[in-house]
Image (cartoon, rainbow over all chains, first blue to last red; front, side, top):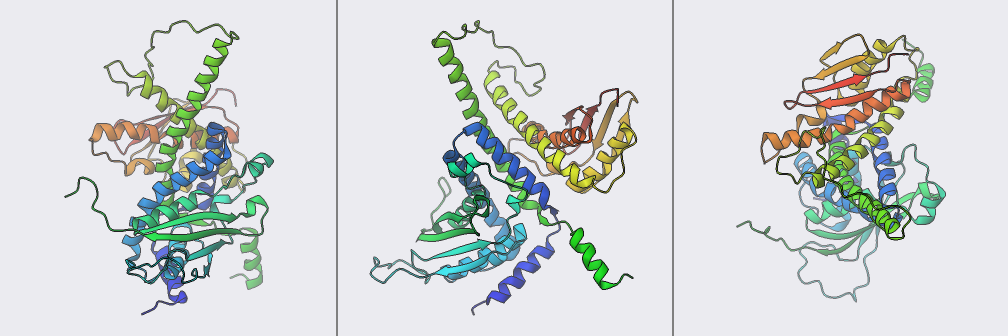
Length: 207
Length: 223
């Protein structure tokens, strides 16, 4: 049975309300902002800082997904479209109390290579775009000119979180920022593209 | 009680605080410490390289061969003698965490103090820290406050929130060691808050048994 968008929204709201441990989002924004500044001072290279933020996000995402699955007890998503809906309406809502809008992008033409091992009906190449109309990480933030020229994606940790979390549920994705209001663009958009489904692997040393 | 339009305006002028999940903050802090460890190693390697280049170019005299000094403040140093590496690294992370904490504390306290009247004396400031700051950051008040009435205050929290969940598979001692690093951030928050209020003091955290933590605050005599 397909869970409608409204139902996901309701699930997200319930999860958020049931959380007992909430902190002021300003504390969160201030922490993240100071951290990014420190990383910039240490690395002095915006491209490297982007990569480090993404890596940090990846590590966070691998833990976050367990927390998420434990709380929400949602089953496996039937296709990539549903992944986008769940991520936006339940995932972001329960951790950051925001609900980005999802725009699903078409599947590539059928001349793509045969996907015989695919169990779910989601074709590698499909993607969705999350549009964040508010970003708690970027409260009180203004980027200086050199950061703009250097190509800093301030909230790049979010890309890493999505990549890490989805990899733990057997999806290899590419996540990147398309635009950011901190950079002067009109909206903040993140695109998540499915690269392939991963085979279940037994962890090393685990028999 | 109040007419609807008035309370709506009130909400507009003073919106309820936006909240974020506490777990997200915990994950961020855990990874922040790891990220800072790497970045501080990169920064110190770069600084050493610059120093070496300057020495080679003859711009500065070469440093005298230093006998590796014991860092007396470093209570986690082992007796095996190879302490300088990890101690330096930890010092880099600790100072970065404290700097981040100071940024957080200063800015957050500005928001907290907005509607508050002026502080009457340093004891009043410390009480504010013990009650309002602690509650906004860590959901409880300080359990015990002691002072020698000469500018030294000791705040004791029997279950300090950032370290309540620290555990290590290597055992209690290892967990204690890690916890000492993690409390650098809260110490920075307190120090930053005090400095923004106008008191340049020092804050020294101490942990003897988890999850109990004490902070020794030294404020300058003249207000």
